[in-house]
Length: 493
Image (cartoon, rainbow, N blue to C red; front, side, top):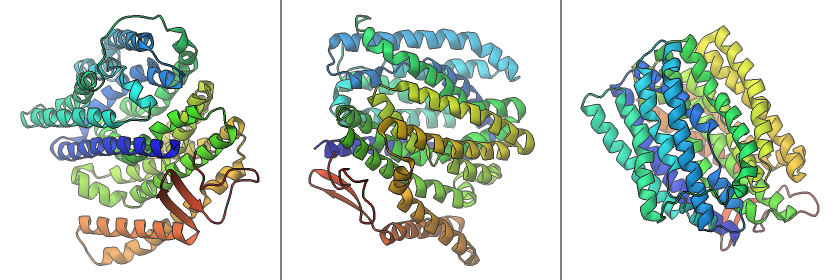
């Protein structure tokens, strides 16, 4: 069945992203011990510039091809050509903005770093479009091999650069090497003979307009805080903020995000069946938040220990940043599910409007927070903006699938209840555990284990069961069923 096929695909994606993020995490720990926060601040500022250009010029080749009823060689050629043109545009634009950007920030070292980082998005755009044929069938083994191979190559080259005295260039090498090697590997895993053609451009054109606008706004949303901190703060503070932000999103990017990638293809297959689509969304949303809530809360509740154990004393002050930022990304998986649904339904304007609302809320919240309380206030501003945006997610889903706000909240209340039990228990027992005077690592493990146990018991106490059986994924809930006329939660997609 479609649910199990999507589940297997999600398994490969989770495995690839988990291994990739584990490698990134291990690399980060090594570099955090050998480099300074200022080194991370410099590269974070340069990466912000590259990320904005990358996102603004993003072309939804994969998303567009997934939605088409049929894909032929001409579609692949058009996708490859768009990727090549995008790479050329990225190169020219970064050549134009690198010096002004470095001048505004008062650091000429930014110019070569920005130009070197540009190879990463260019390489991603030149990867074999033949991979889409496997994605359409929810087969993600090749993605696992591609991402893992690229990350391993990047790790080896980055550590070699670090040991040879390359300093912050090791961070640049790590960022660039993975997509470059991944691009090369993609042609081995999904053979494709490149050809320049725009014969199928009309199949992409309607998708590009709203998506490009959404990406432009999203780029400003996600990089505004780093740009502002780079202009108004020190490189050391920016480095702590950037590392805290990277750590806060690791659970989302490693586990939840990859698991949701096959969801768009599944949504696209059943987009004409309203009832199945509603049920599929509710399942996907519950699954995503089932993982996101304990991860975000766990990081927030143990941020001081995480910084002490993983980063070391020179990163003092990053714990409050990590705590606030981890809470601010808790609802991100819900948006990712809504994002996949909007693309599957051919409604990219929804993404644009949500990003526009986010921009209107986030910029003043982050700016006021920074002016009043510095980097910590900036992180608090992001949390406030995220809380407001969560309400918009619920509202827009009501308009897309006619699922009421109350129904969406009922779908998630047991997750919220378990999260509250976990938070109360950890807060109550952190003091007694600290009195044992355990080493920081042992204390972190003890609290993490306690939190996971309390969260699981909370789910069981309110009747939630997770069962994977032949042909179906069942998030059972004995106390609630969808409204009258809806399919039961136990049914397949």
